[in-house]
Image (cartoon, rainbow, N blue to C red):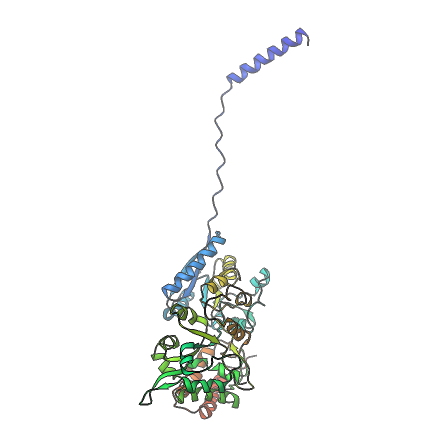
Length: 442
């Protein structure tokens, strides 16, 4: 490098140093602020039940929010007696912020007809939610005009509970899948205990009168000719009459508790726990109580008549979405999670509170545990025989049942009426009711 070039570079270096020294020192730049966390969408979730049941639901909500922090679930709980009146008042208010986004409801068709429920078909189709996992006939209880308006949480699986200690004492063989009505009657004779005055001190069977449709359908009978759009009552057929007579005869002979007596005694759970009844026919909701009491019991499929069929009424209260919800996409996220095999269905089943509406959950280790009852396969066998026929899947069913069918059946259970005479009269009134309501509807 020449001396001249070196001189030029030296001058430039001095100039740069002077300019730098005279320039203001920039302030340290503050780091960019982190974006504010998005405010979660808030949903209101309504259900009925006791404070203990509310605790269980809250645990389910907490599990959902852990998986979905973008959605906040607030619970709204009322006792059964107040729930429906209060929730209808919220819908009637017209305020979308007052109505629950998701609710537990029964019967779904009644409320769907009133226009307060969201049609779930578009959400099911868009998300690819699997309806094929439900037990046969179960979704019919949550449909209106062919569309799904709710997702049933559980299935009303009625099985035969039996007290093994009382069976052993009476020398009666435990019931199995081969038992017929005749076997049930033979066992009932030995399991019924009376005192010196002839008063029954131990009944063979306790079963709510409202479950009579199980006997009827087992025997090839029916309540109505169609359970969505009926035209006539079928309780007057020979098959239906024989089934009702079978049950009423058990009451008249002292083998089974009369419906009113059962209610006064505290229900089937109370009489089974106290040993007043050796058998009850009920859904799986009693399991947790009997296990807590450490009862020596098991379950079996309900006996069927010779030549009859196994049958179980498909139905259960459903989770529904309000038509007035402001957050329907978030509501569907929660609703479908509640009825997902890895979400709410799994959690409720693990807690022993339901027989799951989803076949995949019922046939998994979540339900098939080592906890009593031992014969869980019997419960699944009853579930596999689920079908329509236990009640009507139309909005006017409750009115028909409470005003016509129910009162007539109560007289039979009380021993005040003969099924052969009472059921034809019942059907005349039911047929007139259907005609007055415009059934069958086009």
